[in-house]
Length: 118
Image (cartoon, rainbow, N blue to C red; front, side):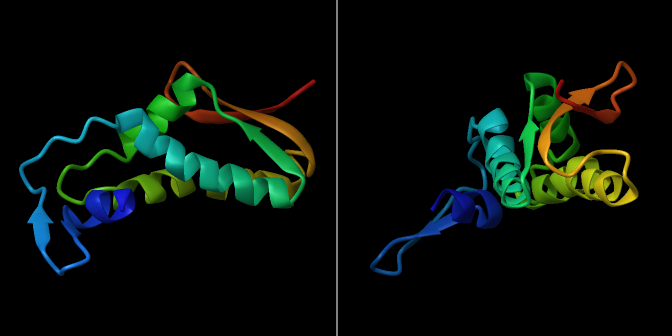
């Protein structure tokens, strides 16, 4: 139901009544990013790699994926662009070890960087 609201700006009830949320402010900014990051975390854990996201990384993804005209769709792209694709390339290229825990940080220039846990 929440994703329908975030993606479509409306909700449809069980009696086919649709309520528009076009001019509504939904205050769930960091929670919305967490939904996408949790999906990525679960996917990576199936491959024995655990991702840790400090607050700065969550805020960076949220900032990159914020677009009031397109709902939650840009957040998925932001997660993939900033974390999903780069961490996959790092693992395939051998720069990040497969398995273990990887901390996702944001450097002072706003770039997302990956550090293996000690």
